[in-house]
Image (cartoon, rainbow over the protein chains, first blue to last red):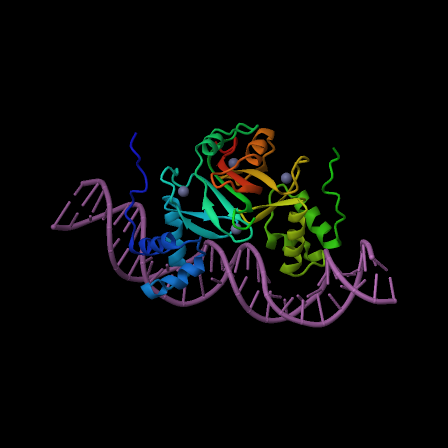
Length: 133
Length: 133
DNA sequence: ATTTAAATTGTTATAATATAACACTATGTA
DNA sequence: TACATAGTGTTATATTATAACAATTTAAAT
Ligand SMILES: [Zn+2]
Ligand SMILES: [Zn+2]
Ligand SMILES: [Zn+2]
Ligand SMILES: [Zn+2]
């Protein structure tokens, strides 16, 4: 069973923006990204949002919905942005992608009463990290 | 074991806005709420956001993070907005709060590798509802 | 190699979502 | 009554995100 994702060739803007997010120790917000790539010629919000949309779509980054921020995926087994889980410290805002086989298995198989079958989920846990406790 | 939540007395603005959301068949967005309550004297976005913040805090409504929209809680066992799960149809945008004892038990007990203990979570499932399939 | 379709880019303008700051008012409680 | 806490009204502004259009690049398909 070949691993067969994340083999996209990024375009110039996508690569610039991915590199920035990937280097960042914390999730980045769109306008902060914009500010940081202006020296590389990316001048308009839309250029940033378009790259972000694509990067999310192909699973290279994820959006933290409750923070409107973007984080690079470092989870090699991540199902191309279809199943994401994060832990968020409410004090220091440290955010980590959770990689738990049992969690993803449980959620992937979850079916609600209506028999609705889900193709995707996003889970955000909130609490206090070790440092902040 | 007494059930001891959601016994808050709402203020005028909070009540007006809660009633509107509670009657709505679908989640409502802040500026749509604003438009709908202007005839009742609520004129500014901040008045709406302040009421929304409070209503979320006391668990009368929840925010659907991926949609920036608000839905009334109809889940009597809901742990005061500390543990929420929703199903979202990506075609018709029908959104339902999921009430599953096994799901909430699983998530409430979930611990990640770092030993971080979570006080809250929000889960959003995406897929196609029965009608849209 | 040439044509065609699809994706990406650049740009300006604008829409949609959310908060800051300040003065004032109501409410609870010691 | 005095004090603290929460809520209100208001104006202005910050932040997040998309619409619309023209041009260019890239990838496939003849
Ligand atoms: Zn990931
Ligand atoms: Zn922390
Ligand atoms: Zn609820
Ligand atoms: Zn549907």
